[in-house]
Amino acid sequence: MGIFDYFRQPRQKSASVAKERLQIIVARERAARSGPDYLPAMQQELLQVIRKYVQVDDDAVQMNVDREGDCEVLELNITLPDDKE
Amino acid sequence: MARIVVITSGKGGVGKTTTSAAIATGLALRGHKTAVIDFDVGLRNLDLIMGCERRVVYDFVNVINGDANLKQALIRDKRVDNLYILPASQTRDKDALTQDGVERVLNELSEDFEYIVCDSPAGIERGALMAAYFADEAIVVTNPEVSSVRDSDRILGILASKTRRVEQGGEPIEGKLLLTRYSAERAERGEMLSIEDVGEILAIELLGVIPESQAVLNASNAGQPVVLDEESDAGQAYQDAVDRFLGEERPLRFVDVPKKGFFGRLFKG
Image (cartoon, rainbow over the protein chains, first blue to last red):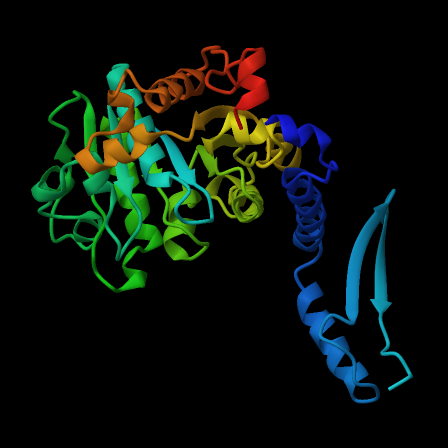
């Protein structure tokens, strides 16, 4: 660190950005791995069904399996497009 | 019975072959009879890193297909006793590595060797799956960089589910982390993921940290496994990793930034 760096605005270091991004993506991919095998196929089929009625993005259907005690909860999130267009 | 160790990473170019050569050579230097196998069918490279490329006559696939026996295909290292190399085939037939064939070769090697080091290809295709399938232990080579860490996590998922041990109802093998191309200076400046960052994300035991080092390219230029360069930081870091692999305790080296004096801090970047 040179003498002039002391006066610069501190900004977020690139390593901490990297760490945050990794923590998010790794957690998501681990969740996908630990879910049942049929999840990706089911997600695709649901997407097709929804598209019969509404045009939605490829990532509009998000699925998650959570464990609560002995219970498995399938969480399904569908993002519909904005109406304004 | 030999211990089968897979050196894997998912991402290419992070140092799997360098590590395979270094770990296998390190084990042999400590008196353990060791074979190192190149699983990268199509792209043969371990022979170059080990410096025996001109002595390749038969390869892994020749042995699987029965065109040659193991004795004919194994190349004995000229520098280190107890060290043998089984080169990859350059065939373009990716299906040449059959599960039965690989199992037969590993079983035969197991009778004679203490350690079998499997140098996995990059990716998660057949070669990589075959290298990992029969493993008792895994060393996951990772660079402190986002894509490498993510791919390592993918590979840990495969190790947890797609090995013979798991399919036979046993405990999954635990991957050990080898962090390579690490720069303590850059990590301290916040420009590189630190050892703690990577450890926190992957949450596996740390086997070692290999510093970014000119010695690695020098070693590969010369076809000398870098552990044989005893003066070098990378060579010593690999030696420590081998000792830890064998259950000894070794403090981490080459992971701290040398402290600069007052003027050094003021005027040097």
